[in-house]
Image (cartoon, rainbow, N blue to C red):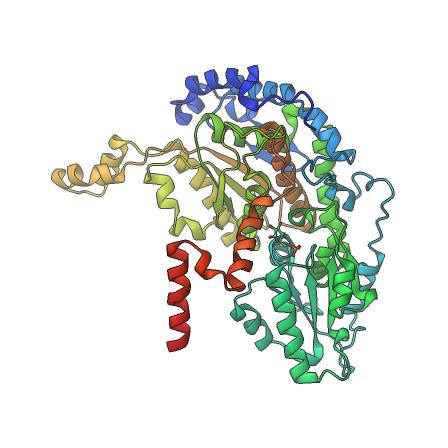
Length: 535
Ligand SMILES: O=P(O)(O)OC[C@H]1O[C@H](O)[C@H](O)[C@@H](O)[C@@H]1O
């Protein structure tokens, strides 16, 4: 992966893009639309029934061509082939990243056997009420204990696709804060509850602490003597450690090493989803992702949605100097989407070491944040309108049914992207105030406060509905977008060494290494101890 590597800013196509950025830095999107009636047509793409509108991004076709040239010069095609061909794209850990194999888009690595039969049968038996606890009562509640990739994907998809009146209640607990598990336990009956310990490594402190607390809760209610393994299952790459915890061998479902945690929702980590939404809809999720895999692998770059999204994100980050990406799904079901995307983008591409060990001279992952529309409109959109920053936005808009509130939701999405692009100048502000009949002095005083510069760039992804198939395609679209960016930047999107530093520090503090810390940390530890003693 390191052969012939040239840092991105040294590529001629990168330098060409800098010239385009200078040319376009003061582009008025409103004027661009006014002067080019074909702008939407030339800067939007359709794939199946998914429409991606890039025409509200601050670029033109010449800049887009230049971005595509950067992709070519960065040998992105070679990268995509390497990804699908099980090459060691995770070059620091010496592994492939083959989440696409889980949805049948490519074979698993040589010698690996993919058998999801056991986890599917277990989930189906749970749904059928055939799995019983130690007292013989059927299991009616599943609590997933996991964090990061072992939580965010399944939790988000669960919220998006859950239905009222499921055969088994499913809940997710991630935090080591005792309150999260306590709240879940307060709703649960020990004799009908099963815990799924989801942890690729089976060594994550939060998950193991919660698993131990769950076991203690069961033991207190049911007694140890009957054995508690009827109330546990596990999904892990460390199957021996899971069995050593006391999970019955046949209930330890393997997660392959070559599937990264944040890419694992398609694997046995989807067990709570199989329980909650059933096999048919889980398969539809996989089918949607598979359709996006094929598109990513085969479509020419100029029509390739993950490639275009990756390039346009890179354009905003590196050439227009925008530091964040706000993701704005107009769907209550996607209320956890931003949290999932934060891990996907920021843990994958929030890095600075390049393939050749040098340090990146350009910005990598943006700060990803967001929230659902219309709720965010009444909270943080103010900053989009009148703040001092440029904020690129992804509007994710599943059209859904023809129902008045649903229509209003979608109209709101379009209204936001339009108003944020068009803005309101001083003359417009004055006109709005005059239309209210305000006296001239009041118009003079208030008008500057009503000005919105506009020109905020956005992409709109329009889908027919939020069903399992389209959700699968959407998730795979972002997964591949992240790959495109990581490849061009020359970083490894599949490791996460940075996270380890904080874990090491937490372990040191737990072992009483407070005195060895800096003055602030030592004082905070002392102050917390004092509060514990007095509280
Ligand atoms: O699944 P686990 O091994 O418990 O890991 C859970 C999470 O913890 C880590 O700290 C990593 O940064 C994440 O990538 C991972 O998803």
